[in-house]
Image 1 (cartoon, rainbow, N blue to C red):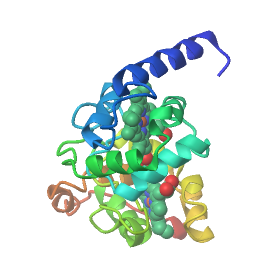
Image 2: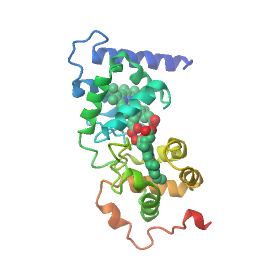
Image 3: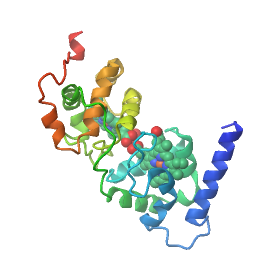
Image 4: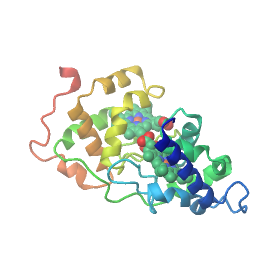
Length: 225
Ligand code: HEC
Ligand code: HEC
Protein backbone atom coordinates (compact mmCIF):
# COMPACT_ATOMS: atom_id res chain seq x y z
CA UNK A 1 0.00 0.00 0.00
CA UNK A 2 3.07 2.26 -0.11
CA UNK A 3 3.06 3.55 -3.70
CA UNK A 4 1.67 7.08 -4.27
CA UNK A 5 -0.90 6.11 -6.91
CA UNK A 6 -2.29 3.48 -4.56
CA UNK A 7 -2.57 6.02 -1.74
CA UNK A 8 -4.39 8.36 -4.08
CA UNK A 9 -6.76 5.57 -5.07
CA UNK A 10 -7.45 4.78 -1.42
CA UNK A 11 -8.28 8.42 -0.66
CA UNK A 12 -10.50 8.75 -3.71
CA UNK A 13 -12.41 5.60 -2.87
CA UNK A 14 -12.79 6.59 0.76
CA UNK A 15 -14.16 9.98 -0.26
CA UNK A 16 -16.54 8.37 -2.70
CA UNK A 17 -17.89 6.03 -0.04
CA UNK A 18 -18.26 8.83 2.49
CA UNK A 19 -20.16 11.04 0.06
CA UNK A 20 -22.37 8.25 -1.21
CA UNK A 21 -23.25 6.75 2.16
CA UNK A 22 -23.29 10.06 4.02
CA UNK A 23 -20.45 9.40 6.48
CA UNK A 24 -20.60 8.11 10.01
CA UNK A 25 -23.36 10.48 11.11
CA UNK A 26 -25.77 9.76 8.29
CA UNK A 27 -29.52 9.70 8.73
CA UNK A 28 -30.63 6.32 10.09
CA UNK A 29 -32.21 5.00 6.88
CA UNK A 30 -29.18 2.77 6.29
CA UNK A 31 -30.82 -0.63 6.49
CA UNK A 32 -32.17 0.05 3.00
CA UNK A 33 -30.13 -2.31 0.80
CA UNK A 34 -30.73 -0.34 -2.38
CA UNK A 35 -29.36 2.84 -0.79
CA UNK A 36 -26.39 0.98 0.66
CA UNK A 37 -25.60 -0.38 -2.78
CA UNK A 38 -25.16 3.12 -4.30
CA UNK A 39 -21.38 3.43 -3.70
CA UNK A 40 -20.86 -0.01 -5.27
CA UNK A 41 -22.45 0.93 -8.60
CA UNK A 42 -19.32 2.61 -9.92
CA UNK A 43 -17.57 -0.77 -10.01
CA UNK A 44 -20.25 -3.49 -9.80
CA UNK A 45 -22.66 -1.65 -12.18
CA UNK A 46 -26.30 -0.60 -11.55
CA UNK A 47 -27.74 -4.11 -12.05
CA UNK A 48 -24.82 -5.67 -10.10
CA UNK A 49 -23.77 -7.71 -13.15
CA UNK A 50 -20.09 -6.79 -12.84
CA UNK A 51 -17.87 -6.28 -15.89
CA UNK A 52 -17.38 -8.71 -18.80
CA UNK A 53 -13.58 -8.37 -18.58
CA UNK A 54 -13.89 -10.30 -15.31
CA UNK A 55 -12.25 -7.63 -13.16
CA UNK A 56 -15.51 -7.15 -11.23
CA UNK A 57 -17.76 -10.10 -10.40
CA UNK A 58 -21.52 -10.33 -10.74
CA UNK A 59 -23.30 -10.02 -7.38
CA UNK A 60 -26.91 -10.22 -8.56
CA UNK A 61 -28.70 -13.36 -7.39
CA UNK A 62 -25.70 -14.38 -5.28
CA UNK A 63 -26.35 -16.37 -2.08
CA UNK A 64 -27.00 -14.01 0.83
CA UNK A 65 -24.83 -15.75 3.41
CA UNK A 66 -21.94 -16.04 0.98
CA UNK A 67 -22.10 -12.27 0.35
CA UNK A 68 -22.12 -11.58 4.08
CA UNK A 69 -19.14 -13.84 4.57
CA UNK A 70 -17.15 -12.15 1.78
CA UNK A 71 -17.60 -8.80 3.50
CA UNK A 72 -16.19 -10.30 6.67
CA UNK A 73 -13.19 -11.87 4.93
CA UNK A 74 -12.33 -8.73 2.97
CA UNK A 75 -12.57 -6.82 6.23
CA UNK A 76 -10.31 -9.21 8.13
CA UNK A 77 -7.84 -9.33 5.23
CA UNK A 78 -8.25 -13.09 4.80
CA UNK A 79 -9.36 -12.34 1.22
CA UNK A 80 -7.05 -9.86 -0.44
CA UNK A 81 -8.26 -7.20 -2.87
CA UNK A 82 -7.25 -3.56 -2.37
CA UNK A 83 -10.53 -2.02 -3.53
CA UNK A 84 -12.81 -4.38 -1.62
CA UNK A 85 -10.74 -4.20 1.56
CA UNK A 86 -11.16 -0.42 1.59
CA UNK A 87 -14.88 -0.74 0.92
CA UNK A 88 -15.41 -3.39 3.60
CA UNK A 89 -13.31 -1.50 6.16
CA UNK A 90 -15.32 1.70 5.74
CA UNK A 91 -17.19 2.74 8.88
CA UNK A 92 -20.48 2.63 6.97
CA UNK A 93 -20.20 -1.15 6.85
CA UNK A 94 -19.31 -1.74 10.47
CA UNK A 95 -22.86 -2.69 11.22
CA UNK A 96 -24.00 -6.29 10.70
CA UNK A 97 -27.56 -5.12 10.04
CA UNK A 98 -26.47 -3.06 7.06
CA UNK A 99 -24.38 -5.88 5.63
CA UNK A 100 -27.38 -8.21 5.94
CA UNK A 101 -29.65 -5.62 4.22
CA UNK A 102 -27.15 -5.16 1.42
CA UNK A 103 -26.74 -8.92 0.97
CA UNK A 104 -30.54 -9.45 0.86
CA UNK A 105 -30.93 -6.72 -1.71
CA UNK A 106 -28.24 -8.23 -3.96
CA UNK A 107 -29.40 -11.82 -3.63
CA UNK A 108 -32.88 -10.71 -4.73
CA UNK A 109 -31.67 -9.14 -8.00
CA UNK A 110 -31.94 -11.01 -11.32
CA UNK A 111 -28.65 -12.62 -12.38
CA UNK A 112 -26.98 -11.53 -15.60
CA UNK A 113 -28.71 -13.36 -18.51
CA UNK A 114 -25.70 -12.93 -20.83
CA UNK A 115 -22.38 -13.10 -18.99
CA UNK A 116 -19.09 -13.17 -20.90
CA UNK A 117 -18.41 -16.77 -22.02
CA UNK A 118 -15.37 -18.70 -23.17
CA UNK A 119 -14.63 -20.06 -26.63
CA UNK A 120 -17.20 -22.88 -26.36
CA UNK A 121 -14.89 -25.55 -27.73
CA UNK A 122 -14.57 -28.00 -24.86
CA UNK A 123 -17.89 -27.78 -23.11
CA UNK A 124 -18.17 -31.53 -22.70
CA UNK A 125 -14.88 -31.61 -20.82
CA UNK A 126 -16.16 -28.78 -18.65
CA UNK A 127 -19.41 -30.59 -18.06
CA UNK A 128 -17.71 -33.82 -17.01
CA UNK A 129 -15.32 -32.11 -14.64
CA UNK A 130 -18.13 -30.04 -13.21
CA UNK A 131 -20.43 -33.00 -12.65
CA UNK A 132 -17.66 -35.06 -10.99
CA UNK A 133 -15.99 -32.52 -8.79
CA UNK A 134 -18.08 -29.39 -8.34
CA UNK A 135 -21.79 -30.19 -8.58
CA UNK A 136 -21.90 -31.91 -5.17
CA UNK A 137 -21.50 -28.54 -3.50
CA UNK A 138 -22.33 -25.86 -6.08
CA UNK A 139 -25.37 -27.79 -7.37
CA UNK A 140 -25.88 -29.27 -10.82
CA UNK A 141 -27.32 -25.89 -11.91
CA UNK A 142 -24.49 -23.90 -10.25
CA UNK A 143 -26.81 -21.94 -8.01
CA UNK A 144 -24.96 -22.74 -4.81
CA UNK A 145 -26.44 -23.58 -1.47
CA UNK A 146 -27.81 -20.99 0.97
CA UNK A 147 -27.26 -22.85 4.24
CA UNK A 148 -23.63 -23.78 3.63
CA UNK A 149 -22.58 -20.44 2.15
CA UNK A 150 -21.73 -22.08 -1.14
CA UNK A 151 -21.74 -19.35 -3.80
CA UNK A 152 -23.73 -19.25 -6.99
CA UNK A 153 -21.22 -19.60 -9.82
CA UNK A 154 -23.67 -20.08 -12.74
CA UNK A 155 -23.64 -17.11 -15.06
CA UNK A 156 -20.57 -15.50 -13.55
CA UNK A 157 -18.30 -13.88 -16.18
CA UNK A 158 -15.86 -16.34 -17.78
CA UNK A 159 -12.66 -14.35 -17.06
CA UNK A 160 -13.57 -13.97 -13.38
CA UNK A 161 -14.35 -17.70 -13.10
CA UNK A 162 -11.13 -18.57 -14.90
CA UNK A 163 -9.19 -16.48 -12.39
CA UNK A 164 -11.01 -18.00 -9.40
CA UNK A 165 -10.50 -21.53 -10.75
CA UNK A 166 -6.77 -20.80 -10.98
CA UNK A 167 -6.96 -20.01 -7.26
CA UNK A 168 -9.43 -22.81 -6.53
CA UNK A 169 -7.05 -25.21 -4.78
CA UNK A 170 -6.41 -22.52 -2.17
CA UNK A 171 -9.95 -21.18 -2.20
CA UNK A 172 -11.30 -24.61 -1.28
CA UNK A 173 -8.56 -25.89 0.99
CA UNK A 174 -10.54 -25.56 4.22
CA UNK A 175 -13.77 -26.82 2.66
CA UNK A 176 -12.97 -29.74 0.45
CA UNK A 177 -11.17 -33.04 1.01
CA UNK A 178 -7.41 -33.01 0.23
CA UNK A 179 -7.93 -35.31 -2.80
CA UNK A 180 -10.03 -32.60 -4.37
CA UNK A 181 -7.61 -29.77 -3.77
CA UNK A 182 -4.77 -31.83 -5.18
CA UNK A 183 -6.93 -32.68 -8.23
CA UNK A 184 -7.54 -28.95 -8.67
CA UNK A 185 -3.83 -28.24 -8.40
CA UNK A 186 -3.05 -30.84 -11.05
CA UNK A 187 -5.68 -29.67 -13.52
CA UNK A 188 -4.35 -28.68 -16.93
CA UNK A 189 -4.89 -25.11 -18.22
CA UNK A 190 -7.17 -26.37 -20.98
CA UNK A 191 -9.32 -28.19 -18.40
CA UNK A 192 -9.58 -25.02 -16.33
CA UNK A 193 -10.66 -23.10 -19.44
CA UNK A 194 -13.29 -25.73 -20.19
CA UNK A 195 -14.61 -25.71 -16.65
CA UNK A 196 -14.88 -21.91 -16.49
CA UNK A 197 -16.53 -21.85 -19.90
CA UNK A 198 -19.11 -24.48 -18.96
CA UNK A 199 -19.94 -22.72 -15.67
CA UNK A 200 -20.34 -19.32 -17.36
CA UNK A 201 -23.05 -20.95 -19.51
CA UNK A 202 -24.91 -22.74 -16.72
CA UNK A 203 -27.71 -20.19 -16.69
CA UNK A 204 -28.23 -20.91 -20.37
CA UNK A 205 -30.23 -24.01 -21.33
CA UNK A 206 -28.24 -24.43 -24.58
CA UNK A 207 -25.09 -25.33 -22.66
CA UNK A 208 -26.08 -28.97 -22.29
CA UNK A 209 -27.22 -29.33 -25.90
CA UNK A 210 -23.98 -27.88 -27.13
CA UNK A 211 -21.99 -30.42 -25.16
CA UNK A 212 -23.55 -33.23 -27.22
CA UNK A 213 -21.98 -31.89 -30.36
CA UNK A 214 -19.84 -34.60 -31.99
CA UNK A 215 -16.17 -34.05 -31.19
CA UNK A 216 -16.98 -31.31 -28.68
CA UNK A 217 -14.15 -32.47 -26.46
CA UNK A 218 -11.33 -34.95 -26.89
CA UNK A 219 -11.14 -35.42 -23.23
CA UNK A 220 -8.75 -37.63 -21.36
CA UNK A 221 -9.63 -38.01 -17.69
CA UNK A 222 -6.95 -36.50 -15.39
CA UNK A 223 -6.37 -39.87 -13.67
CA UNK A 224 -5.70 -41.67 -16.98
CA UNK A 225 -2.34 -39.95 -17.39
C1 HEC B 1 -13.43 0.30 -6.62
C2 HEC B 1 -14.23 -0.79 -7.16
C3 HEC B 1 -15.18 -1.51 -6.22
C4 HEC B 1 -16.16 -0.98 -5.40
C5 HEC B 1 -16.51 0.49 -5.18
C6 HEC B 1 -16.84 -2.12 -4.81
N1 HEC B 1 -16.28 -3.30 -5.23
FE1 HEC B 1 -16.84 -5.17 -4.69
N2 HEC B 1 -15.35 -5.98 -5.81
C7 HEC B 1 -14.44 -5.24 -6.54
C8 HEC B 1 -13.46 -6.16 -7.14
C9 HEC B 1 -12.30 -5.76 -8.02
C10 HEC B 1 -13.84 -7.46 -6.74
C11 HEC B 1 -13.14 -8.78 -7.10
C12 HEC B 1 -12.12 -9.12 -6.06
C13 HEC B 1 -11.35 -10.36 -6.42
O1 HEC B 1 -11.06 -10.57 -7.59
O2 HEC B 1 -11.03 -11.14 -5.50
C14 HEC B 1 -15.01 -7.31 -5.88
C15 HEC B 1 -15.65 -8.37 -5.26
C16 HEC B 1 -16.75 -8.24 -4.44
C17 HEC B 1 -17.42 -9.34 -3.77
C18 HEC B 1 -17.04 -10.81 -3.84
C19 HEC B 1 -17.89 -11.46 -4.91
C20 HEC B 1 -17.66 -12.93 -5.10
O3 HEC B 1 -18.31 -13.51 -5.98
O4 HEC B 1 -16.86 -13.53 -4.37
C21 HEC B 1 -18.47 -8.80 -3.08
C22 HEC B 1 -19.48 -9.55 -2.22
C23 HEC B 1 -18.47 -7.37 -3.32
N3 HEC B 1 -17.41 -7.06 -4.14
C24 HEC B 1 -19.40 -6.50 -2.82
C25 HEC B 1 -19.34 -5.11 -2.96
C26 HEC B 1 -20.29 -4.19 -2.38
C27 HEC B 1 -21.55 -4.61 -1.64
C28 HEC B 1 -19.84 -2.93 -2.64
C29 HEC B 1 -20.41 -1.62 -2.17
C30 HEC B 1 -20.60 -1.48 -0.73
C31 HEC B 1 -18.63 -3.06 -3.44
N4 HEC B 1 -18.36 -4.41 -3.61
C32 HEC B 1 -17.90 -2.01 -3.94
C33 HEC B 1 -14.43 -3.88 -6.74
C34 HEC B 1 -15.26 -2.98 -6.09
C1 HEC C 1 -16.86 -29.21 -0.71
C2 HEC C 1 -17.75 -28.29 -1.40
C3 HEC C 1 -17.24 -27.64 -2.66
C4 HEC C 1 -16.76 -28.26 -3.80
C5 HEC C 1 -16.64 -29.76 -4.08
C6 HEC C 1 -16.43 -27.20 -4.73
N1 HEC C 1 -16.69 -25.98 -4.17
FE1 HEC C 1 -16.32 -24.18 -5.03
N2 HEC C 1 -16.78 -23.26 -3.28
C7 HEC C 1 -17.31 -23.87 -2.15
C8 HEC C 1 -17.51 -22.87 -1.12
C9 HEC C 1 -18.10 -23.11 0.26
C10 HEC C 1 -17.03 -21.64 -1.65
C11 HEC C 1 -16.97 -20.30 -0.94
C12 HEC C 1 -15.61 -20.13 -0.29
C13 HEC C 1 -15.59 -18.89 0.54
O1 HEC C 1 -16.51 -18.66 1.30
O2 HEC C 1 -14.62 -18.13 0.41
C14 HEC C 1 -16.60 -21.93 -3.01
C15 HEC C 1 -16.10 -20.98 -3.90
C16 HEC C 1 -15.93 -21.16 -5.26
C17 HEC C 1 -15.67 -20.14 -6.24
C18 HEC C 1 -15.54 -18.64 -5.97
C19 HEC C 1 -16.85 -17.97 -6.31
C20 HEC C 1 -16.74 -16.47 -6.36
O3 HEC C 1 -17.81 -15.85 -6.56
O4 HEC C 1 -15.65 -15.91 -6.25
C21 HEC C 1 -15.55 -20.74 -7.44
C22 HEC C 1 -15.31 -20.09 -8.80
C23 HEC C 1 -15.74 -22.15 -7.22
N3 HEC C 1 -15.99 -22.38 -5.88
C24 HEC C 1 -15.68 -23.11 -8.21
C25 HEC C 1 -15.65 -24.46 -7.95
C26 HEC C 1 -15.34 -25.44 -8.97
C27 HEC C 1 -15.03 -25.12 -10.43
C28 HEC C 1 -15.39 -26.66 -8.35
C29 HEC C 1 -15.09 -27.99 -8.97
C30 HEC C 1 -13.80 -28.13 -9.62
C31 HEC C 1 -15.74 -26.43 -6.96
N4 HEC C 1 -15.89 -25.09 -6.76
C32 HEC C 1 -15.92 -27.42 -6.01
C33 HEC C 1 -17.59 -25.22 -2.03
C34 HEC C 1 -17.18 -26.21 -2.91
